[in-house]
Length: 551
Ligand SMILES: NC(=O)C1=CN([C@@H]2O[C@H](COP(=O)(O)OP(=O)(O)OC[C@H]3O[C@@H](n4cnc5c(N)ncnc54)[C@H](OP(=O)(O)O)[C@@H]3O)[C@@H](O)[C@H]2O)[C@@H](O)CC1
Ligand SMILES: [K+]
View 1 (cartoon, rainbow, N blue to C red):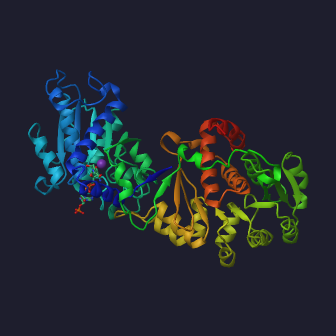
View 2: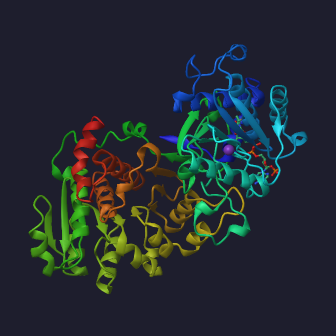
């Protein structure tokens, strides 16, 4: 599990490192720029000089005989991101590249370290001036555009020639696939905390992110640790691929008070040793819990059956589908290892819940939004059991304040964006409002606020699934970059996720752990199966995923 930083946290870590006297800002900037160049050569070895993938010391570069090998345009902004750009420009030039640099800002006002690197650059190359009408990207042989306009300091929309330059770069890369765009730290115009483009009022109302002046990089190279914006919202689309450069700040993470806000964690393979309870080691079926999934009526049972299969595969000792009497035959024809009970009404459910071996419930998939369904949700909540509320149950809770008020700390809500907006309309409005200044309100902020209000775990679905509990703990299961699994967008995959979480609750996982693990496993199953996946495949892929995890 890795912590995702906000811009403020990154600044605090950098400040602590500099205050310690162990490193200077200038050294950090040099490491950053050097790391960007090394990452470019690792990403595209054909761009690397013949002596290897990483830059060698400058004195070596200056003697090389590979002049004019490639051409780069480096876009430098008015702060330290721009300073990194000057370092990159210098190193590329010393490697034998033709390099043109543009400065968006006033050289006299650059912060001290950026200013030093500006001066170092102008000793070996010029800073171009911009005239409207110029083709600033130059001849067609452009290999690389380095976007060093803004990083963690972005607070306002990019305007004037700054936004024009990004459009030029985008246009060039779209015409010539060999022209690569590399963003330093973050794609300029993307907010470090939210992943949302910071847009000017004049763009408000335009639906497409493509219409905004924002970099869609092929590669983004960031420093120390990922920022939230790399994983949230449009961040991943704008970053392209993401590489990390170690600039020697690890020792300072712990020495910094990163403020009141708890860190957001990104779910990774490393977390699995924390859940030793996942493999079954001993015990009989009921010692691994009994999950009850309520189903809809005739012809509406598919969603609950998918959830039940997910709960069983993830390891619940016993799983039962409860359905109205008319749907018993339909369900019986489809289920074997999963038990089937007649839950004809609220009284029947209350009777069943007298059996305290039933320790986890799943309500919502295919359930309908009738008064009867409302009664079942109320009975489920009253029982105090660990409970996953999905789909129709979320609709019911969203329109019924007394039901909402019954949510408790053993509940997990699993809304997609539409359901989230029905449950938390004011929070959804804040998230949907155009981000005109940074740091912008993020999906992490929205999910944490929702969890606090609901008093339980909220899992807000998407490629950037955010999971939060009422204590402020928050994690992101990102199905982006190397974990991108767009084929997960298939009917029923949400029902299986609800089933995974319910099964894990039955296994004794806490609500937050169950939600995190369920979401992570769902992506792993999708990645393991690959394109062509349908919801039924997800539970069947779990044994393979468990084997790969060594469970
Ligand atoms: N932290 C670290 O450890 C390391 C950080 N490093 C690098 O430093 C970068 C952060 O540098 P940074 O703080 O100077 O911010 P940056 O993004 O260059 O913005 C500069 C200033 O521009 C302004 N401004 C904002 N938006 C604007 C707009 N739309 N249009 C016009 N102006 C705008 C705003 O200033 P303001 O005008 O509000 O006073 C802002 O402060 C980081 O991303 C990384 O690349 C590395 O060197 C290695 C170690
Ligand atoms: K940038």
